[in-house]
Amino acid sequence: MRPWRSLLLLSLILLSGSSMAAAGVHVFGPGGPAPAMKAAAAEFEKLHPGMRAQVTAGPTPQWLGAARATGDVIYSGSEAMMADFQRDLAGVLDAGTIEPLYLRPAVILVRPGNPDHITGFRSLLRPGMKVMVVNGAGQVGLWEDIAGRDGRIATLRAFRRNIVYAAPNSALALKRWQDDAAIQAWLSYNIWALAHPGLAQVVPLQRQYRLYRDCGVGLTIRGKANATARAFVRFLRSAQGRAIFELWGWQTAPGA
Image (cartoon, rainbow, N blue to C red; front, side, top):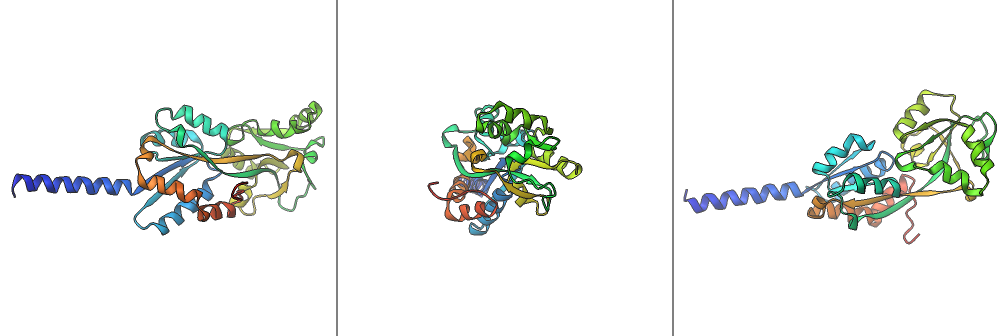
């Protein structure tokens, strides 16, 4: 084979390999939005044959190193969490591409059948109640923000006295909920009950105590150059993406 033909063949092979690599997108983020994100990835792959969307989810330390090396899309469970990702992925995550997608409400998760007759936030202030919160990940400061809504220090004092476990993330809170039946209520998000049928019953917070936090998404520098990554983010924003997130408990009304 003539040398120029060998070089041409090698170039074609390299271009083909580059195209194949670009046909995949590596997505990283926390466990809370993961059921919706994984369902969206599966539907994206069905609609775009040949394009792979791999979602890796869980506590940040489990995937941060891989995200630095191979991440295309990073999603979060709150704006505080996304700010942490900007810090921890400095030089990797492109801040200019970050966009909030959808909201989910904080709720009270109670044991199935609601044996303690919890009707709202003020039920959690009853003396002797055993309440679990998450004080990390996508719920940094959440319980304080909720308890402080009425502007009364007595409310924060009463609630704090009833906290029996403050988990550093929702994965550990989930394990504690499953292992410790003495915990009567878990201040968290609705999506944890939807992702684990039979785990808990949802009691909405009264309007004056209700808070929402978002799932945001951003591209890495690598992801900006990846057409599949950009297409996946567009899909998350699309009507089909909204419908999937809505099934998993997210507020997706356009313009809301």
